[in-house]
Amino acid sequence: MNNSLETPQRRILVTGAASGIGAALCRRLAAPGVTLFMHTRANRAGVEAVAEAVAQKGGASHVYYGDLAEAAVAGDLIQAIAATGGLDSLVANAGFANKTPLAELDDATLAQSHAAMPAAFNRLCRAARPFLQAAGKGRVVAVSSFVAHRFQLGDVSMPASAAAKAALEALARALAVDLAPHGVTVNCVSPGYIKKDPGAHAALGSGNLRGAHDRILLGRLGEPDEIAALIEFLLSPAAAYITGQTIHADGGLGL
Image (cartoon, rainbow, N blue to C red; front, top):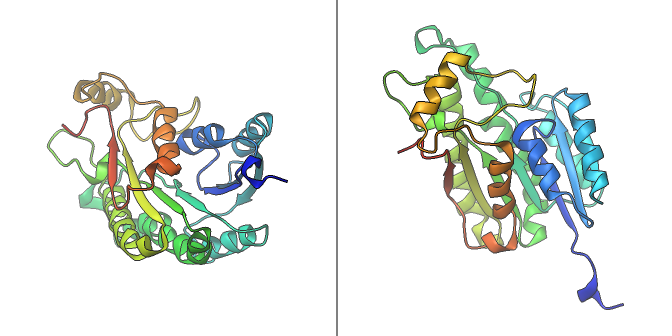
């Protein structure tokens, strides 16, 4: 058989895959030869719907549940994936927005955000490292947020989330340096205000959303699929020369 005619095999982990950006990404990536490992904390209905969409496009999927803020979950997840044949790409998308104001932010609340985002990312990457290196052209993408970059009067303030996402970006840059000799790229995507799935919890009320429109140069919220398209590119061979970057996709909000 001519191996050049075979469908390339890709094995990609997406955390927070049951809704929003994670779900949109899985739908974009789904194709013959692609196996998606889709994680969600507890959204069974959402992730099952995504798995069905993946199957309709000829892709394969495995679903995993668990709270990544718990220390053992990341390692268990990677080991379960490794038992099926390895991993070449990791998308750390799972997270949550914490609106606790700074004056009320206690140690436990701050630690909760760090456990669920930068600490979970570090554990995932540590466990996945041997498989990413073995892949030769591994990819890591972490989903950050504009809240780690915008601090001004009258704007939305989420200090716990901002600190967690800033730490996530710093870890990603350190990992980019560490894994570069192995051909593995590591990047962050920093979305602005992105539409939520119908019925999903929104971090901002309607008043704040109206104000957000006034601060976005393009005058609208982003679509989950627009962020997914950027992540899809960063996972592709075309992005092989991009690493250690935080790429903002925010409709001009940062300006």
